[in-house]
Image 1 (cartoon, each protein chain N blue to C red):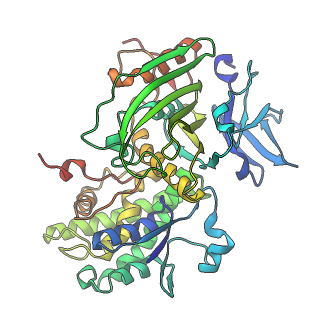
Image 2 (cartoon, chains in turn brown, red; image 1 turned 90 degrees about the vertical axis):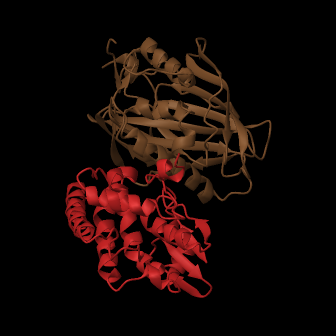
Image 3 (cartoon, helix red, strand yellow; image 1 turned 90 degrees about the horizontal axis):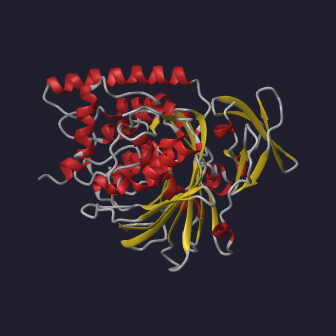
Length: 278
Length: 204
């Protein structure tokens, strides 16, 4: 037992995808889950019931005793948004590497070429990063980046503004310029289920304003993006995310990642991480 | 022509890639294969009772086998066909049943005997490596000669995506050179897991 790790909520299934009871891993331990009469359940390996929350189209559980409710995304509740279950992708990488990659903008022109970025527009301008103590979350704001096709709904290249939020150690929420509705934010999330310290199941979920694209097109777009990341993630070394500076040298563009690592260390979240002196 | 397409499918990518190399326009219809299982929906089953992708619809004709689709796309392009293609189209099907299955298992949790799938994949890669090495000794870079044909396009995707299923391509230098030759073709398009050649696309 490690309260700093166990007392969080973790995504373990897409609710609409639970058609029969099944087993999965959470933090290296077997759990089983299912749905009966419209209500989801989760059991640990000994058959004891674990707490559940059904939110954002996904089933969440915790092996410990969470001392607060699962975070909310008020923006996602506004009417007119389409809620997109993207499904899951398994990746052989630390769950923290998966989150950190989601927070990174600098790789866009090289990994998501001609979609989320393109040469020569490779510079990441200065942006603001903060650990918001009152809510215990990491936030990056005023992130701007030129994107050839920012979303399925984007007609051409635009400078997109982003806000990144890390409300839980293995979850990130991204707010980005909504091409068809200036003034509103599209919401794109990455919910990561830590299977083991070096293996995770990633559940992206979105709440978008898009009246044009079919649901299948929106799912395809996000899977395309995430699968471009997957092969990079599986080749990152060291396998576990180093929380101490020295092993990897950050640049100006990595401010969010620096804050994320610092925050993980502060709250004692070491699953999928390594603490090594420089 | 309409391609019912799934962005992460190696077999759909064969069709997209072939059309791109030929400069043949395709209208893509995204199908939510995962997690939606839309390929098994009544509308899709009406089009293809087998419930598989890709599906190519050309006016009244519906083709559901990727080898048949490659043959049809290249019907007016004899330079993309060779008498040896058939055995490689069959081999491509072996790659799909081994490396392709391992990939679906590792990425989206398909049921599979993963050790068996990977072992069959490695065995297929060794055959491919041996053949491509022989070709290189003869000064030929592609599967059936000095020019690419549908044989190469059929075998390329599941080979290049092998690492997605936990099978490394490091031990196969001839395969890697062959993949590089395919990625260098004018009109080449990528898919997630298969990156374009940045360094060759914009030489200094």
